[in-house]
Structure formats: structure tokens, C-alpha cells
Image 1 (cartoon, rainbow, N blue to C red):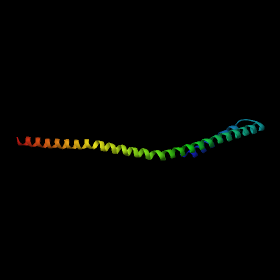
Image 2: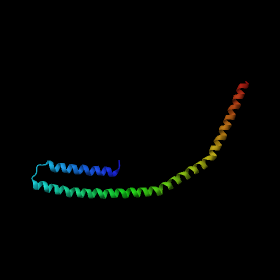
Image 3: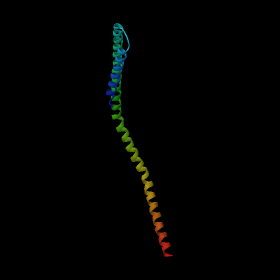
Length: 118
């Protein structure tokens, strides 16, 4: 759901609720006009607040997007460097383990041959 759609629904619901309350209460004509004027003033204030909040939200999203564009490539490059460093540092261990596994396999083959001969 888009944020602007959410705020539009929120404002529309608030206006509908205010109008329903104003017209459903028993009042005289002058009281009703006074209530409508007061509700109108309140709604204008709330619209102004919503407009400010939307502007703040847009600014925040713009700032986050800019920051992400700057920082994500740096972080990705750092991760790539770390992985490459890890691979280089573990290469000798990997080679040693491969040699040890080959030696174990050779020893097992010799053992199997010696068992078969008996």
C-alpha cells in the first residue's frame, strides 16, 4: 500500500466521521453553523499537519535512498574483500587437508590389500 493512499484514506475517514457527528447531533441552526465552522477549522489544521508529515516522510525517504546508494556499494565491496581474504587464508589449510585425506585413502587401500592377502 502506498503511503499517500493511506493518508488519503485517513483524511477521508476523518472528514466523514466529523460530518456524521456534526449532522447527527440535535442542534439549532446557529449552533450547527458554529459547529461546522469549528470542524472546518479543525480539519484545515489536520490537513496542514498531514501535509507536513507527508513532506517529512518524503524527505526521510529521499535521505535514506541517497544514503543507501552511497553505503551499500561500499559495504558490498567490503564483504567481497573479506571473502577473498578468508579464501586466501584458508587455502593452505584446504591443501593440507586434501593431502591428509589422500594419505588416509592410500593407507586404507594398503590396509584393504593386506587384509585380502591373508
